[in-house]
Amino acid sequence: MVVRRGPARSRQREEFWRRIVSRQPASGLSIREWCQRHRVTEPSFYAWRRTLSRRGIRRGATVKKRRAQVVSVEIAGGANNALGRAPLGLVVNDLRIEVGVGFDDVTLRRLVSVLRETASC
Image (cartoon, rainbow, N blue to C red):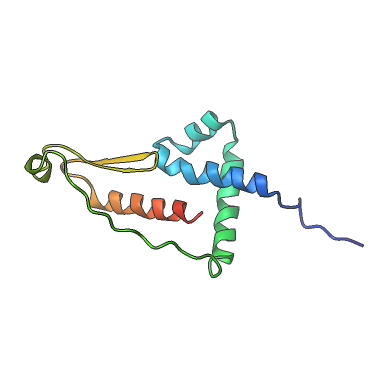
C-alpha cells in the first residue's frame, strides 16, 4: 500500500512559482495587481509564498549563500548628486532603484533585505 501526502513535486511548477513570488516585491505592484497581470490567483500566490518560504528554511543549512560584492560607484554630475539635487540610481540586472532627497532609510533597508532574499532563491 502506497500512501501519498499530496501531489508529487514538479520542478518546473516550483520554479514557475519561485519566479512569480520572488519578483513581486520589486515590481511596485500590489499582490492583487501582480497576480492579475500574471494570471494567477491570489490564494495560490499566498500558498506558494508560504510553501517556498518553508522549503527555503528547511534547506537553508545546505544552500550556499553568495557573498555580496562591493563595487566602486562613480556619481554622475559630481557634487550635484552628493548634495542631493538629483536621485542616486542603482541598476542591478533589470532592476533600477532611485534614491532621492529625504529617502526613508528604513524602507531602503527593507528593499535591500527583500532583494537579498530574492537573490538566494
